[in-house]
Image 1: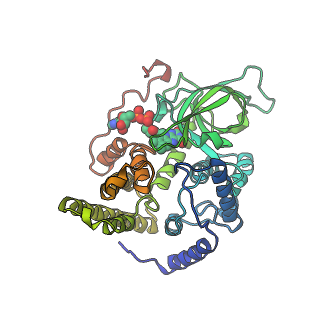
Image 2 (image 1 turned 135 degrees about the vertical axis):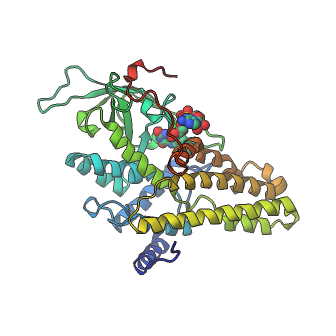
Image 3 (image 1 turned 180 degrees about the horizontal axis):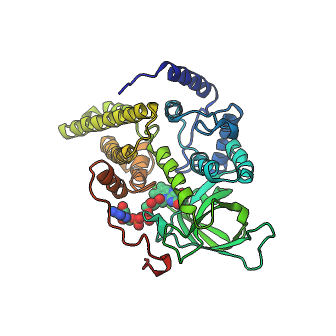
Amino acid sequence: MDFRDAPREAAFRAEARAFVEAHAPKRWRHPFDDGVDERELIDAQKAWQRTLFEHGWAAILWPREYGGRGLGPIEQIIWNQELARAGVGETLFVVGIAMAGPTIIAHGTPEQKARFLPPLLRGDEIWCQLFSEPGAGSDLAAVAARAVREPGSERPEGGGDWLVSGQKTWCSGAHYSDYGILLARTDPKLPKHKGISYFLLDMHAPGIATRPLRQMSGGAHFNEVFLDEVRIPDAARLGPENAGWSAAMTTLLNERMALGGTGGFFSFAELAAHARAHPERLDALTRDRLAQLYCWDKTLELLNARVVTKLGRGVIPDAESSVMKLALARILSAGADLGLRLAGPDALRRHGPWQHQYLTAPSLHIAGGTDEIQKNLVAERVLGLPREGRGDRDVPFETLRRS
Ligand SMILES: Cc1cc2nc3c(=O)[nH]c(=O)nc-3n(C[C@H](O)[C@H](O)[C@H](O)COP(=O)(O)OP(=O)(O)OC[C@H]3O[C@@H](n4cnc5c(N)ncnc54)[C@H](O)[C@@H]3O)c2cc1C
């Protein structure tokens, strides 16, 4: 492992740091924070995204021909580190830039790229992800939302409108999004991975109802989304009919890479400062837990360095992102728990940074693939254990028993 920036990387870091120091918003509000004025947050983040766009920093990994910076994963990691250093956290554009955009670039038609990529990059349109359903989360290929061709809508050039009905859930930001990436079943007679199509859904279309889901942190950041015969033109289908699983894999791979980073989630330095401010609460057990967290945090940092080194050699990391996500979720939960313990009676207050971290940490054990699913991946790819048995891969979806 090499911990130092190579000269090219050091030059990139200096350029990124100079830009971020000159332009980043001075006060960053996280979309999950309690009491955030959502309209204000959207306006502020759109303004920041436009600034990034105007200076060529909107998408580090996207090819230059689509308005990106055309750089690699190492530069993306450096960029993320520099944003975290300046206190700039997650943006409302993460689904658009990190997930929808790369999928459209990989699978879209020239018309779809021309229509969707520029406004997404400029920050004019916010995207959400409509994948999960009440019966399809870890087992995403079980999506049951149904898309059928509208009778009589066939066009001379081929294709016709689709009518989509069903229920999606846990859709972050769906209530303020302009577009959604949507998986729907177009042929239930095919096995479950094969009868799915991928659509780019106009969230302002008639027939869409979003209902907020309140989190235990107090916010209502994600939603149930009900689709009632929502019309989608065939031109908004991404990739071939019934072959949406391949595009979905592109999205999920990009999601895992976006979530794998460590920046901005947890700061050991903040926890240590909190501990120093409360020496009266530093009993032997608390000191021990603090030391353990320091070791975990350092281990995660080393793992991150290993991933960066691999990327630098042109190797795509495999199970490391699963290990990193597992470790990060555990560190976040344990850090929040210790932060509250050190706060003493103040922990009983409704609001506070450690309260907030304590209430949001559980979501990281679930979002983007649960702990158990990551452990399955580690078991198969690191430990070489047999793959999980799957008897439903070649059976028509309509014959499967579903919850
Ligand atoms: C903060 C947050 C934001 C999210 N945002 C979005 C979004 O914007 N769009 C979207 O589409 N989805 C979103 N999700 C949904 C997320 O992708 C799912 O919650 C996740 O994939 C798990 O699916 P599930 O909730 O249906 O749980 P289930 O899959 O029903 O799992 C229930 C339990 O069973 C375990 N389990 C399931 N299968 C296995 C297995 N094979 N082996 C071992 N254990 C297993 C799980 O680990 C879990 O403990 C979000 C979730 C969170 C928490």
